[in-house]
Image (tube, rainbow, N blue to C red; front, side):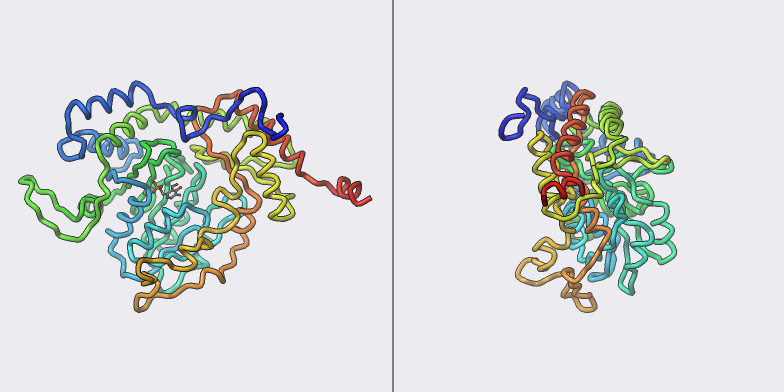
Length: 421
Ligand SMILES: Cc1ncc(COP(=O)(O)O)c(C=O)c1O
């Protein structure tokens, strides 16, 4: 180590934000060249977005996919076309990206946050059931870090209460639980194709559904509400947005999808090496798969039960950074997503506080929420973006770095005694 703590031999962990951690190669170039040669960069007239949708749907075994411009857009489109009464509520996770909440709020719906299982960071049928109320209309679980929430259990709960189930599978492309892929149980499954995601085109998204009519509505809504007939005549049955995926993005997404087996296999192999190296370490737990699960590891997640307070968790994060491992506390910081200013302050344009201010909507006080599961998870879990560039030997270094960082920060009672004397 250098005085600053960085590894001195030039080793750098491959990251998802440049070519060190991504495979963008000949296949992507060929697809891109075909788009440029054809000259249609918008999906109208091109073939790539159509092909990507067909192939994404086929790989998940669902009838319909609609490509859009981001994961946030996919969630907005899904919730908008469900046509739920404005100001009604969607129960979701407080351990998620802002995009989940943006999708809900932009559809005129109020987010309600359920607690999570502290061991996984996932909402459960029990934590969601505890939030049901007279305004609840949908449940939106987030499949986190490449793992699946209990979509079957949540679907049963949703069915019992007449609610729509919409899955946010942005972080869990092709992960499976009991043989069922993330995003394929609910009425809609939504995915982000942003730079760090398992299948990526830089910025993009896609939603899937088995419902032909809803797929058609989604297609219209994300195309400015334009019902594009054979003649190209302009009919606008509803007001929509322009969230269309362009052909260049679709070309890359398609090539990535063709190589997804390699991507998944590499992510899983290197993750297994870290888990194996740390299996017997009593001071750190690598989050792993359930027996019926196939994870697609968007993140490496570790938990340390012994962390006594936030200050120590932050010291551990710094020690990991000094090892060249840019772990993030909780993945999103130590606070649930509803503690960010935009949500707690309901900062919408013009101070309108929409949708919370709609007649009949509840003006939730998110500051008053107490979610012990989420609080524990976010202050005892550290995550590191995983990627297909990480080799077995990188993974061994990651495990060594974690071990050293934990040893440097772990204060045992014996340690403390020595310090007090
Ligand atoms: C769980 C989750 N939902 C939604 C999003 C939003 O996706 P995008 O950034 O493509 O809008 C993300 C992106 O990180 C995410 O992780």
